[in-house]
Structures are given as structure tokens and as C-alpha cells.
Length: 617
Image 1 (cartoon, one colour):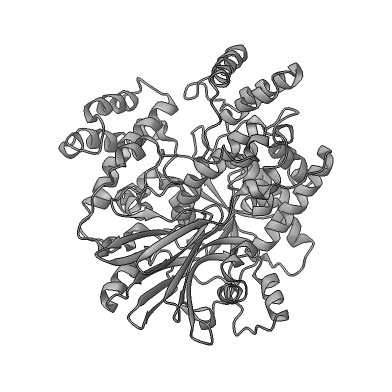
Image 2: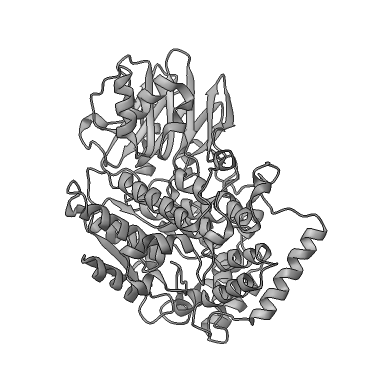
């Protein structure tokens, strides 16, 4: 897990080093720079995880010196690939996945990425053909940006490493659209800064003769699988896949932990880790580190559920109290490091992974991805109503699941009657069907997309095109700001293909969302967590903060001249009034408070990025 930077043609050393150093947080352990024949500069900031010796140093050359690679990420199945390559005659001088990656490319060419189970953003330079090969993992867990400035092609793990090559920073022509569609721009090439583009997930490409050519190597719809007909067999298959996914992701030469919320997904992950360690002596106690964010006195605090899990598994936990005042003075710095816009403050997540690092843990296995694959959100629950429309029993079940998932705090969270929820949804959906509207997706013309049921189509888009790409970006930043790597067992491509192939009733039913996960992991978890219905999610308790600890900050901000004159805020005076109403406790609605933060954040971003005094951290 690292930060990478490259330019074609090469860049003068001190200029390049200054740009690479903006990524120091991503790779605090060491760095490497290679200027190859003045044709390319390759730079790497290293976070040492596999083969922490000098043998794993990057940029890494093949013995022939023809190929050089820089790579951010992890190839979890590198041992299996290495064995296959050794049988084909390759020899290895390190125990790093980087060397395996490079020799896999030499052996199989660009199709090598189809063999990888992992996350990556990589670049390989061929000194003979003068060709740069680039690739980004299937779902975009690892970031990659690029730009062409004054005849120079630049690519990097974060936009800030490209900034030093630009004459000035300006907002993109699409900025207003992006700030209103926070969940929809990450899966596109659009970036907040004009002139910078995002290398797309699931794509590879080449840069040669001054031109970048991209192609899509992965589409989940091309990799759907046959699933057992019985639900019980599906549960067995999922359990086997999930345990193997965790097993692969527990490979590390440094200490492993987990960010545990007390929700089903993170609890399932640590329970699987505990079960694997219990039955395999090759795992040491170096994985038994659980970190729990706490929000005492707010509706978002789930720490008592997390304690149930750690008590059940017999391991300890570090509880991280999220006190906004402790780090709020660093908010602009965090926005600079985060680089993008989101609906909630980055503070709780940055603080949590900061505590992970301070306690000597470099890698976490976390539960991201299950909600988007298995309908953990309320809207996904509603989409299954269309699939169940001819079945009264299933319809009632789904409506009960929907109501049970709403946070019990009725002051901050709205509730509606089941009949109204049902009639409103079915009226909207029927209208769309009459008009011939398909589920929005860039892949809705694919033959296999049309074979998916309604819920699966909705979740496909959520996972590949809006919610999940955004969360992957966010958690990459939250963790890498602190030099921590997150591994995500639910994101294993075998699991993604399997769960996109099962029917809606496997994902939701019998009273619960994420049904198959509950049944598969039930033997390893406390019943109170496995069969818990309410969902909170890891966010900021924004209403509580605005009305208490941060009330002065919000009022000072919205009354400042710089805010009221900001060109990036749509209507500063109206937003000021709405924020004032929440601070004065005239409005307690969580959704409204979150909207206010979303509309305020471009102003903070402007100060952190466009008006930053220096571009070097």
C-alpha cells in the first residue's frame, strides 16, 4: 500500500521529488525515484507490508532491466501465482507481491490482471518499446489520476501530486454538477480540479506516442456464475468464499487489526478472522486488534454491540472516543488530504484510523461492501418490493424489514406508515415501467443486466457506479491519511460475482436484510449482533455536534465574509439560515443537517485546496 507518481517524459529530480513528497502520508516508510533515459520518471512512496526488506523496494526492475514497475495495492493471492510462475521457470529474489506482479505481466501480458485477487493501481514501463502499461483494480479500491500538462503526461495516486505540475488550480467545468451529485462522480473521469481526470476502475491502458488509450478488462456481468438452487447450499458456498477471502487478506508481514462498528459486516469480518486463527496455528495473536469508534450520548454510538462481539470472541478492543474539538482545528488539513467532497465530515473516520496507526497496526480487515451487495440500505429494501409484488407474504416481510432498519431515534429520523411506503413506491415504479424506463446504469443494455431481478439491478448500479465507488475512495483516504491499509473481504471478486448471481430472496427475506451473511456467520457471532435489525452506519453525529460542541464554529463560519462571498456555495445566505435553525435547536432532522454539511463543504474545500498557501504537506 503506497503512493505512486510518474511522468512521461522524465522530470527534473528536485521538482519530481517535491511532488512525490505530497504523498508521504500514503507511504511513510521509504521512497524511490528512477529517471529512465530521460523518457520517464517513476516515483514510489512505500508503506511496507509484504517483504519489508529492501528487496521489496520500488520502483522495481526486472533482472533484464527491460521492465520497471510502480504499484500501489496488494495482490492477495500472490503466493499461488508465484508457485505457478515458478513452475513455468521464473525465479524470485524477494517475497513481495510486487515481483510476482511484474513477472506475471512478463509471462501473461496485460491479461495478467485477470489472475489477480487484490487491489491495485500500477504502471509498468517497457524500455524497449517505450510503452507505459497502466491498470486499476476491478472496482477502484486504489485511486489513480492523470493529466497532460504542457506536453507532459502525469499520473499519481492523488490529485495533489499532480498540482505542482500545473500553472494554477481551477475548479472543473463540472464542479457544480459534482457538488450536487456527490455519489455519482467517482465512477466517472470527472474531477473537481480542471485538467485532471480519473483513471477508471476495471480498466487498463497504454500511454505511447503522446496518447493514452484505455480499455475495459472487467465487467461483473461477464462473470456471473451458476449458483445452487437451494438457499441452504448458497449459504454454504458463501461461507466458504468469505472464509477464503479473509484467509487471503490475513497475509501480512506487519500487525493486522480491524475497525469494528458493532454492525453485522465488521462483526462478521472479525468473527471469520477469529475462526481462521483458532483453526490454524500459522496465525499469531498479531491480528487480534479491534478498534471501535464511540459517540457517547448520540444515536450513532454502537460501542455496546462491538463489546458483545469482542467478549464473545475473547479478544480485547481499543475504544476511540470521537471528540470533534480534539481535531477540528485540523479540518482544512484533512480536507486537503481527502481532496474530494462528501456528505459527512471526515473527522470520525480519520480519527479512528489515526488511533489504529498509533497503536502499532498497519493493516485492517474491514466490512465494507456488504451493504451495497446485499441491500443494507433502506432504498434497496424498497426495490425488492417490485420483485415480491405478486407475493403477499414476501411483501409484508419486506415492509417489516424496511421499518425495522430505521434508527430508533424518532427526533432525528423520520418514520412513515407501511401502507404509505408501499403505495408511494409502487406508484413511482409502475409509472417508470409504463414509460419504459430502465434501471439507471451504464450497463443496462448488457444482456445479463436484463436477466437480473429488480433488486439485483439496483444493487449492481449502487455497487459499481455510485455508493460503493464513493465509499472506496473515502476509506482509502481516511486510512492512507494515517498510513494504514484497509483490506475488504466482501470485495473479493469471487464474492461479488456470486452475490450478483443470486436472487433477491437470498439477499433479503425471512425478516432480515443481508440474509445470507447472517445465516453463514451465525455460528461465529453473538445472536444479538447476528439478528439485530436496526442499522446505524459509520457517520458523524452532525446534529449533536452542530447543537453542542461545534455550535460556535458553525455560527462563526456562516457569518464570515469569506463564506457569504464564496462562489462555490450555491446560496450562502439561505444556507446560513438553515444552519442557524439547527444550531438554535429549531430543527433536529439528521437528513437536513447532513444536507447542510454537504452544501457547506465546498467552502471548506475551497480554503483547503484552492487557497492553500503551500502545496506541500
